[in-house]
Image (cartoon, rainbow, N blue to C red; front, side, top):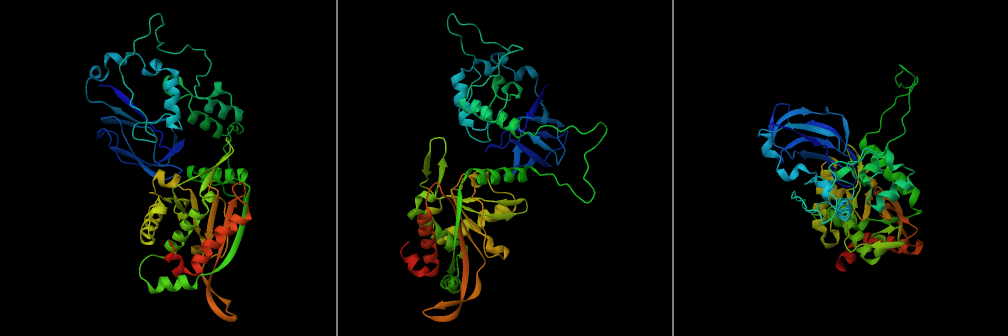
Length: 432
């Protein structure tokens, strides 16, 4: 028998830690390969993590409620077959020491955020366990690195990230194959605050009259994303009051899609007319990257906070189909079950803050997107139509955009295309 230590895998999207929410197995249980063993909460969603090993659970390395960093021990499994049967002769030399640096670099860049376990994050090529023969005259591959050596970093992206963050690579703990420092290692080191040493024997405590609530992984991720958006994007905000009476009447007289689905359809049509708003900015190459697909993000207030799952491929959907997908992704997001792909795929965000009974908002753009459109509550207001004062259903529409991708004229044109469709939905639908 032998023990296999299952490390918390990279769950994709650059996430560096996860909180253990619920164990699905107990110590002493027998598990099979790919059996879900624990439910963890990341900054994105709840995830069930399967084990890559079969055997008996020997140790659960973290209790429920504990936050673990990627690469830390999660579970130890005692295999139920003789150890000799598990270790083929070819595996006596570490595979990582036999892989050329160029191949390691390609694997790292495909993985994106670092080492990725099979079944998690970005897929990569299969790794063979066959020993490579050294070229004639070449020295055999080292079984272990020398005790004192320079940090092993292949990727120039990783080096630049460390350099810009003022990080000494010699202080970074490597989790990549063969002691390779990958991007996740550098990001983890940069995000770790400098330790503050309390006085000997003293415990951190709140001052009188205050209460300290630690930021969990989700709130830390939200904080970082919003701070980055405000720091990097020169944003501008415009708004307009919209007469939604006809759209309201259409919804009331025709069973089927909800108001948000119609608005989403008009937004998608507006983005096809103004594609520079369905984009991101590549600051390194100084280019605006426009997307063919419209992955429409829908801002959702869930139990864990605000998330923005995307309706992927919204440009291909009818109003009825959009209604189904909006309801599905918002329900999943409220329960913390939106997929990592849905949470990361958005190219433009639609925010219905009217559900909170507020009229307007200068929202923060969901980086790396370049714009966000929001709607306030629809309410009865005095309005002039054809010179006559009457009561109409009015909503305020606000639009926040990245001034690097367009000027106010383009932003106003997009807003009016959506507002005009809301004010005359029958005509707009006829021309979709």
